[in-house]
Image (cartoon, rainbow, N blue to C red; front, side, top):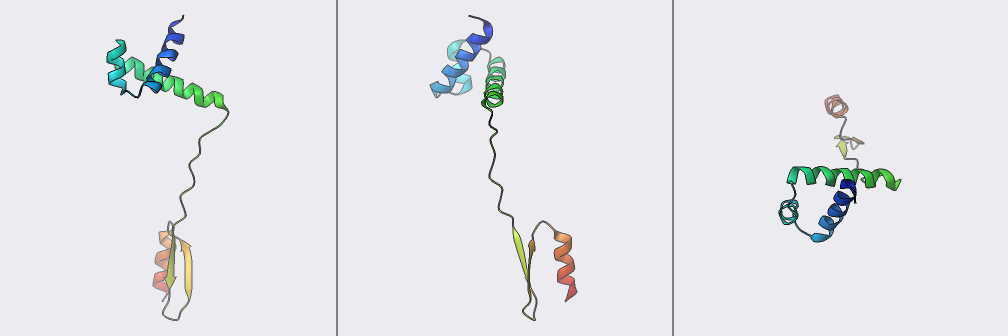
Length: 91
């Protein structure tokens, strides 16, 4: 068994163990920094070979609503603060 195969097997054992990285390394006689490197390497390889990329759902776009005294309502993205400022100063 090559060193790489051994480390891959240990990473799988760790993920199934429910132990912290530190506790697992102490139990197996491993250096924490080296094992952390292998965990990241294995996870990166799994992600690259899966053909899928994990996406996060977009955050809902925050909107502001400016209501003028005459009843006119203007809705706009909250991220454009210059536009909000200009609209407030129009009245």
